[in-house]
Structure formats: C-alpha cells, structure tokens
Length: 105
Image (cartoon, rainbow, N blue to C red; front, side):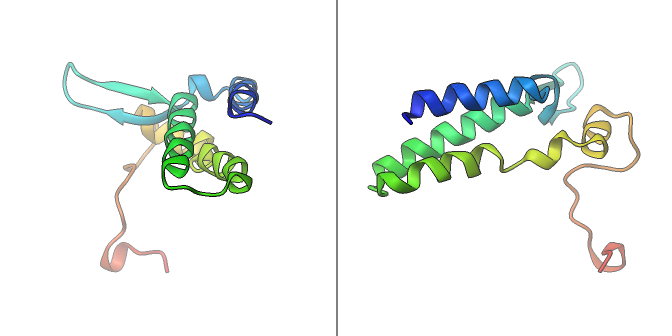
C-alpha cells in the first residue's frame, strides 16, 4: 500500500467516525477562538511523521505501522467527555495535569 492509499483509507475512516466534526485542538482567546478538527490533526500528524521517518532513513517496512499509530494517537479525543470539555459544554478543564492532592492515583 502506498502512502497515498493509506492516506485515503485513513481519510475514509476519519469521515466514517465523524472526526471531521470533532475537536482535537482549540484556542479560547476572545474573538480569536479557533479549532482544528480531529481528522485534520490526525492526518497532519501522520503525514508529518511519515515524512520525518523517511528523512531519518527509517526502513520502509516500519512506515505503514508508524502512519497508523500517528493517525490514531489522539483517538480518545473523539469521546464524549473530551468533546464536551473542548466545546465548553462539560465541567472541568482540558489539558490540566493533576498536581498534588488532585491526582487520582
């Protein structure tokens, strides 16, 4: 499978699961709030990683699994809890690493 074939298959999977309508990255700055869809972010990460691996001379047999792993690296962001937090309809904050007593473990 070529990178182009893998790209189009990933695109198909992303649309099938509604990643084009889900948020991966966002900015809440007043009047400048913008977001990046989960599909755009996943494809961009996978393609940049693929190209970097080629530049670094990574063996071709590792490129396909690398692409898939990079494409899926944020798949949990498609879940209800993250999407509610990212859109401001949920309680809490996204991206805050618990410290001290806030840690669950």
